[in-house]
Image 1 (tube, rainbow, N blue to C red):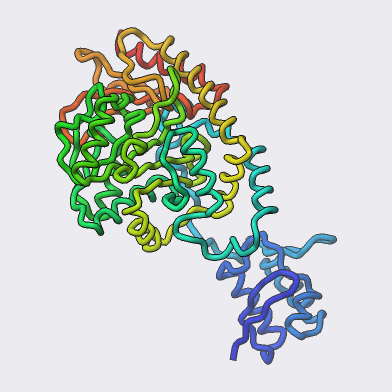
Image 2: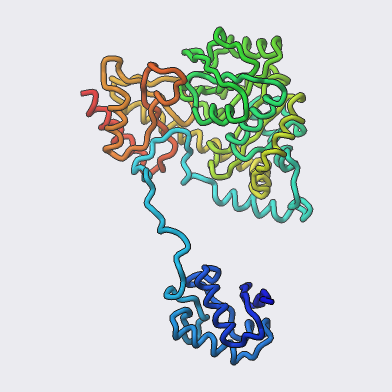
Length: 460
């Protein structure tokens, strides 16, 4: 019977029959290399450690290695470990292809922060503190609701910075906002909510995620004062009241009050996507809608805009009636954000480093928005309030089309998005959604200049 052996020097596995001797050992190593289990360029166990684990003479292993080196399977060098040579290994996958859509030279795509500004040292310090303070028991199978340390920190931060009525017992930490909207939609559908309304325009990917959980998706138009409540007739609605995406308007105070009253009176639920609420430039940030009706509004926040999307950290503050349904949906999803990231964010918030980073980012993005507006030609009309990470530019009604504008930007390798793809109904106006945060600070002037030149080309 073939036995599996492992080396104490390097953990390797060989299908080898001791009775087959030196020839069988050589054949087992050849098979490991050909199958890709011993990969090209990787170090192999020393002759001493492999001989010890296999219970054979070291000279046997030495002769096998010498034979395989002569055959081109192994590569030896004086004073260096023996390694797998490329000659005997088989390719395990096709060569990596160049991306179909390479990264633009000038990144003006919306919804992205400046990743070069990620607070690496503060994050490293927070991670180190979290590792030192966290007991070993915390690294087991965690609660569906998320790390208690982060939920406690978020409760204090959201109450202080966003005016949220927050209780750690009602906070759920999710694996990004896509995960958050999926579990809320699934929970609502399990409670009999067969329809969810979204702002029109809005991000199509989130509409698709919600629809995949069961509810039918309908659209409600947005005007200069935000969501038009006269068109709202659904048991649940997803809104971006602080800074509507992508139009950039804010939900007017009378409509905020009316939406909260509508949800309370009708028993409907509102999902408030506060994706960039920390970034208001012309005045103090608008507080969360959730505070007006905490038992009917689900508050959703994320670190994707303040820190980095790759952290995959988002959170929900739930009405009491939704805590258990969302917990069950979380359990069904099987997805959790990395515990260490949760603990590091909690440390970052508690130390004040998170607030300091947000304030620095707010000042930088305010400056960029001001510089962008000053550089734009008079033929395009900026739309929305002074907030967030993006700006909507409406093109002249009798001027170039959105497709023409996007083509001019592509010729200059400018990453940018069009408005038309966000509408739920055809025949709506086009425009350009310009993200002024993603570009590194040193490249922002060049990105702005190239955008201005593209606009001049099509509007002159």
